[in-house]
Image (cartoon, rainbow, N blue to C red; front, side, top):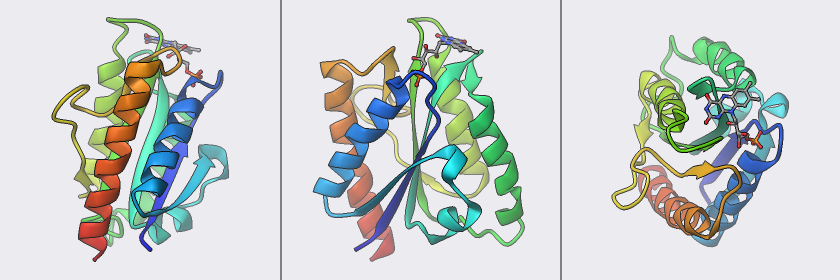
Amino acid sequence: MPKVLIVYFSHGGNTRRMAEALAQSVQAAGCEVSLQKVAQTSLDDLKAADGVLLGSPCYFGCMAAPMKAFIDESIKLFGKGELEGKPGGAFVSTGGIGGCGELALLSLNAALLIHGMVVQGLRSGGHQGPLAIGGPDERVLEECDRYGRQFAVLVQRLAG
Ligand SMILES: Cc1cc2nc3c(=O)[nH]c(=O)nc-3n(C[C@H](O)[C@H](O)[C@H](O)COP(=O)(O)O)c2cc1C
């Protein structure tokens, strides 16, 4: 069964709740899931995964610093292209409409693209990935479910 790593940072629990919803749907769609806080995640975990989802609150229009530090550390995998071709995706919780949450999603997706990963978009809803205002409401939970299932299909195709 393909392995999906869901890595997140969450100070207040909003992003964590999105990560948990995504984990359920990725698993229901047939992938093994490892749900991990960024502080407990190593570069070996990234290498071992068939697909990676990154989640962060929006801090000043960007991903939060602990997630950025982890991504900066992943430069060690960049030289040999160890993440190249793997599916990736992002999800964010932000404080309010117009609070630059989409920029935070873009900052996460940019990191995935720079590694040469294949980023899953969303045709209907938040096109860069699920974006919650505060905690995930019914709309965002439905979006996490759809995104998680689509992501699992992509991982299965590319791992197959
Ligand atoms: C240091 C800091 C910076 C923040 N910057 C933004 C921001 O630029 N835009 C915004 O909408 N919310 C901002 N927020 C609010 C968080 O994105 C929001 O509360 C989020 O839901 C927190 O997620 P969490 O519960 O997973 O920690 C900021 C919060 C903190 C603590």
